[in-house]
Image 1 (cartoon, helix red, strand yellow):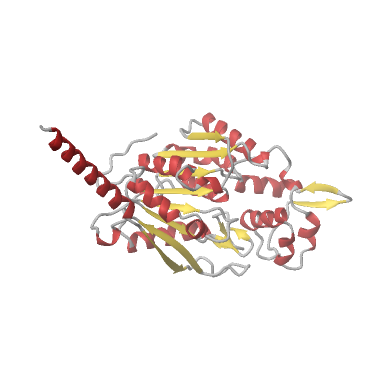
Image 2 (spheres, one colour):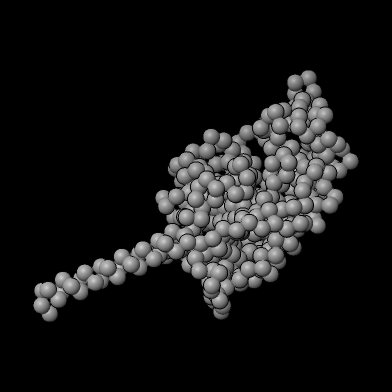
Length: 362
């Protein structure tokens, strides 16, 4: 071949590659908003709305495609502004588009749902005080998505992920419902187990015992979040205004722990206490991983996650556990963030993207 022909062929190849690259970069997914009116909040005592909103990411070409897609259910950090925060402020849609275009993961659907109460997180459990959040997810939201979108309606093509308290929810829902979710990734989960300090020294007991309304607990962050824990795990619909059984009290400046209530709280709340009951469920997952940063200002979270992976090992639960150095939350997003480099590749490996799944375990 003559030199001029070689140069011409090279130029044509370069143009073709550039065209493919441009097409991939221009292929954009779509985000849409939906809502369901849930039957699971009729009896709640704290004013939770039955209208539960969600944002849904659809991959490029979804509207014209005849294909079906796997679904990732995503539980955002509930301390953010709202469930849409990552889409509105961190360009989650652009990141997912890039991941698909670059082959990090095949086409997928992602669903992020508002799972918060007026005080903050629901902890994703059924409670006579806050409503039945677990039932909302399993009995209403997932059937709604499968009925209205082109999904593979089976656990092998359905994963769940979450950040921080959302990570807690991802593990909890995954361990309790392995028939619904086949793969679980939790980013920096909290509530995995006991920390270094005594947890009940965090809330301000004078605020809890003297509260005249739920607004009173909002004046202190630790007290507020522990109120959500108690409403989820020590609910008492007959005790306004907080509707909880308090597992502690202050007497002459000393913290007094109610042993029975504390035992009930620990057994209902900490994920480590649930391992013996749900170890076989966890073993049946196609993939299970969680991570945490050692730079967390609250070392209790680091200590608890280290202990959690050790206890999983004791029960023979195969899983991935990674402690990394670096900031948390904001750095999860972007092409260098852990969602792009860790979470999406994880689901690329463990979700089933075709009609005839070949089940393989981690």
